[in-house]
Length: 412
Ligand SMILES: Cc1cc2nc3c(=O)[nH]c(=O)nc-3n(C[C@H](O)[C@H](O)[C@H](O)COP(=O)(O)OP(=O)(O)OC[C@H]3O[C@@H](n4cnc5c(N)ncnc54)[C@H](O)[C@@H]3O)c2cc1C
Image (cartoon, rainbow, N blue to C red):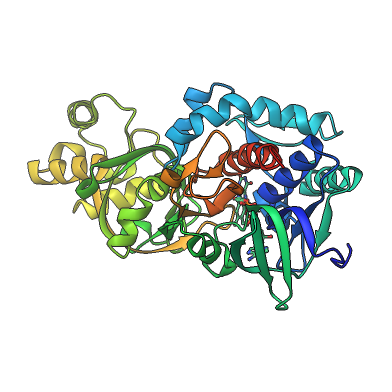
């Protein structure tokens, strides 16, 4: 790491995260003769890569069809279609494998380094940047940018100034980062940032003592938003999490924020059972003498079944044959459309991202280039792009970094 001695740099990348590194590397690859400098506000490079995927780094997803890939982005999917034709997961795999980091695919399509060590990803990126001669300055944030003389005068955290001919903003999705303030200073609009990928706080007696229980699949919906997601769901100490909940939180992130995360949710515990009511009636006819509470159905966890029965007013020894119509209806509702109240959120510790950021209408997505300034580029979470969990957020950072970096040096 070196002190900036030269006050004129060709390309400055603000942010030493996944997107910033990829952008700097590809700028320098395209034009080794130009100076490329990463300015990183914190003490650490690639900090999120280090902690990502529980320290394993879910680097991309095993999905090679751009049309399919874009369906995993609640924001920015449509705009990413073209970019994914230029740089997509197969390119990510090749990029890392050709630099000695072999990747593996898990059953659900998530891809990780074979070593399960995010350090491998970091070492590959740092080695490549170093070999190419990308300069890096730590603890040096970009706090302001003014367009001047076919470039930008940057104000740095220590109040020094620096001139660059092209600027790539890759400051991530943190409101405090200062990246959005710079984009605004240069005339861009920021779609209001709100969290995405979170668990739901839900208090309902059904979930008491069920923490750790997982059901796959369930269908969770938010009726007032006409939204539904299918997948595994995990009961936690505070409420609900797991893929179905995270997907719902991502797709409804903005509407949930508008309602302060106070909505009614509905759970169908048996979405893959074709005729659950007939199944209940069959039990009544065939096993009338059995206590309902003790004869769980639909492969639901036993404790969950008992709680659903109790919720439906069915106590210990009530037998199937003695179930009243009201109780049967209540049980059917609890199983297929159990409603409960969401009362807040917890960010998913495995991965969370920001919904919102630089408005894509003002960005030429072929080059991740500002439509307002020819020499201003964006990459990564600073943009109004976010995906569901599974490696999609890093893929957006690699793709954006590649395109922004390659384009930033054109014409310099
Ligand atoms: C706990 C956690 C786990 C995750 N796991 C995964 C995963 O496994 N797979 C996946 O696909 N996604 C994962 N994500 C999401 C993923 O980490 C982000 O989408 C991705 O890091 C975005 O990259 P970025 O480069 O745009 O931003 P960041 O990684 O946030 O990098 C931005 C950098 O810019 C710096 N910076 C900010 N402001 C300034 C400034 N003014 N000047 C200079 N520097 C500045 C920051 O310090 C930071 O280093 C995870 C997120 C979290 C929080």
